[in-house]
Image (tube, rainbow, N blue to C red; front, side, top):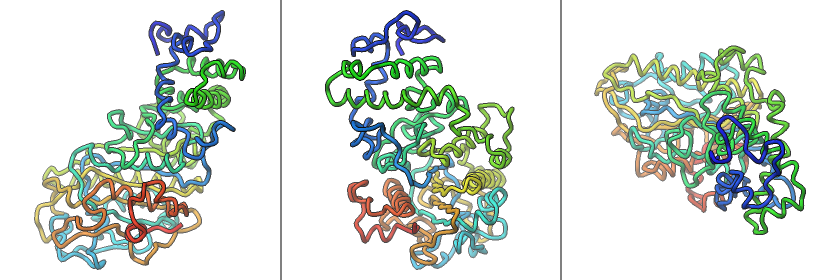
Length: 479
């Protein structure tokens, strides 16, 4: 907002007692409103903001999120986690590799099977799985399907195009009162990855719980550019405008669309801001969730547990369309296994909390776990060898699909992997998605459409990125 019309800590000049509301574009410019509305005027941003269906109908009614989409959360383990040493990739024929000596598992690792028959490292080596089971009940694990995604990635970079959030918004998965939620402000996705295919609307960067409370019903820009008094003043101004006054704001279609969006937001935002307890944004409102995450009424707003719990809770409740959580420090090749094992356990515990929150709320959930590259152990025939360097060619990402009705079958029994590893202990880059972060993300999105029973929309939403035969190779989940 312009400092010329907005004193620090106060409300806009036009909202002060005795000043008229801005009605024309010139008056709105003088009031400091145009700087943020200019962003909304961009057709691409407007289309994503409204969603394809809502955008087409917005001249007839206020846009509402399309109902029925499974909630979606991404967890990024920034730094290059050893995901391939927890879930154990097999070869093209579904058989164990000749050796896992560079993957910290030795020559012939023992295996344990979870999530309906998926191989994980046994003998307590799969710390992510151990962490999951420390927080998620066995009933929750038994109702969760899993698939790995084998792909060669760049190490230690934000350049991997792994985020699917733009595609989610394009499909219609948007929040009821909040934008998508993220952790990092230095990427367009809110986490340490670039978007695949479609750039999402700017996420709300959640620095503390107050960030969510203060952004009810607004886009990320509005939520962060204005304080609470300014947001209320804007809503009051919009609610007070007559149809005739709205028409005076501008005649072209783009401005009319913006007016409609802001008008509809104003009709609900005052209630949201005045009654935040009625919006279902605070995970502490649910005692089971509160205890699961170890948060209390006195937990500080900026504590990570409350931030992650709130992001998860708001996605599952439909308040936000998606959330991108992130844990840092997963570049743990320090010549030991101690640090990496503990961090894998922490990641698993967070995954377990996310899945168990879905179970508590009896909501389905698609959870996508990513990292930027991977790690290598010293070459050893014995399991437990220390992590010694980066090895992005041996990367895997994870897909979890929890359904409170019970685990959904895989399309083909025991076909739990998008792509596979070679005897060189790396992702097979000759596979459709094996050498492309972006295509691997598109494959994840295809699986998301499948669990929503909307795979028929894949071509339209991705510009036919995969043929029908290619889709059959990457889709593992059923609705």
